Figure 1 (cartoon, rainbow, N blue to C red):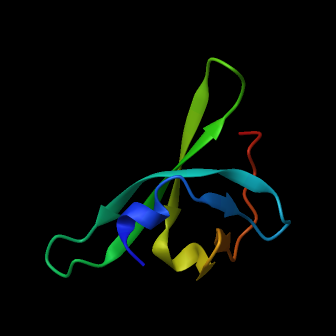
Figure 2: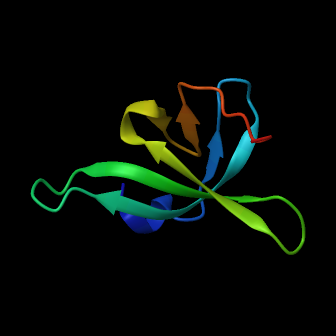
Length: 75
């Protein structure tokens, strides 16, 4: 999968809740491996929140990004 395919992909936690869309990807410059996904969570029409997801918290990539954690959006 190319990075272009990740951008805009829905991110789903273990409770099957869509927490947002992949907005950006952070790489390790020396290895080229993904370290984190930056996920945009829209709180309402005019505000959104960035959520940082560690690579270790990703269970699977397919039609969406499936996490192996539950994300609390109320913080």
